Amino acid sequence: MRSKTEWCVFFMCVLFVAGNVQAQDIRANLYGAYVFDDKIDSYYSSSTYYEGKIKGGLQWGGGIEYMVRPLYGVELLYLRQDTKAPTVYVRDLSSSIEETNFDIALNYIMLGGARHLLSSNGKLEGFGGLMAGMVIAELKNPDNGREANATKFSWGVRLGGIAWASESVGIKVQAQLLSAVQSMGGGLYFGTGGAGAGVSSYSTIYQFSLGGGLVFKFPIEK
Image 1 (cartoon, rainbow, N blue to C red):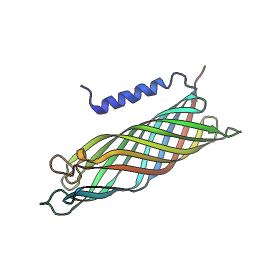
Image 2: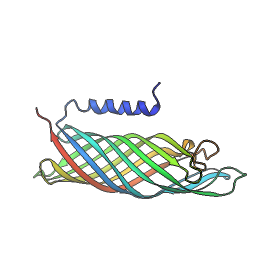
Image 3: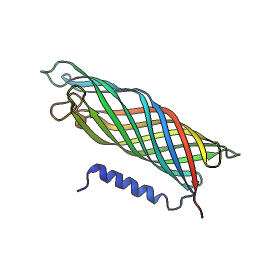
């Protein structure tokens, strides 16, 4: 039996390949951005809650974009952030208030569509679009060494521009919002960082970032 993660990856790859049928060119995108802090909290009851913050930091990754039409692209991309999540929590009536600075890694695998706009001289190019996919969140509790992970649905939106230094190399700048739906809590067990007792309610992540990267264009011979 395939796991849920394997089926998600397989499904996105099928959609990605299908979008390449009428490709005009292929673009390789390299990304680097600063992600801002995001608050997480969940108050399941007065005696079971957590509140904390996913700290900001560097997010990096890359993607392959197929221009299915001259101004429409489909991109499969991977983004990763390694950061900290300082969290205060109470597990039940018998527990005192605890605090842990969790180690967390967020791995986004996304399929995105983008609409592009070209300037009259072709040197500048704007773009914007939506993304959908999944985030694989890996959590470690440094206090006891326990680890856990969870795979959740994620979506995103981005807007930016490209300045073409040549016909095949460009510099990209963009603003981006990624959201992982109900990803913190539950299987990640804020409170212990592993199997056993933990806070079982959820908090959705909203990660806003500013950054850019490089674009390499590879025209397809007709």
